[in-house]
Length: 85
Image (cartoon, rainbow, N blue to C red; front, side, top):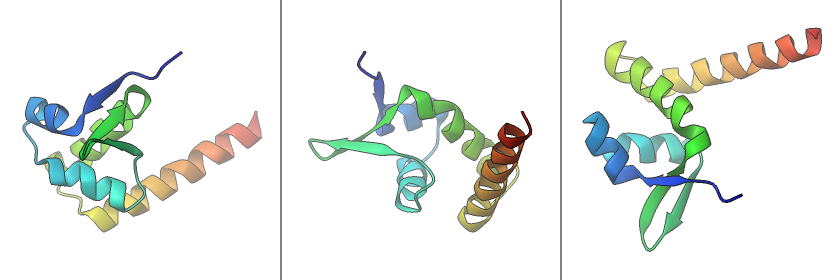
């Protein structure tokens, strides 16, 4: 089954944010983007993660470094929860 992708530009227009924000997330290894014909695309599976970053950044004012810390801590919590099961 092929993953559904959406253009970063289209996604950002819909959410009324700058595409550079999503590209910065990618450059800091917080999300995975695919490049095709000099345009970046987001996989459907990553949309919820990006939306979480948008909320933290735009609604709570968390900077990119803070997003990295939050992401790291959430991954650790998820790992610990899986180990307990």
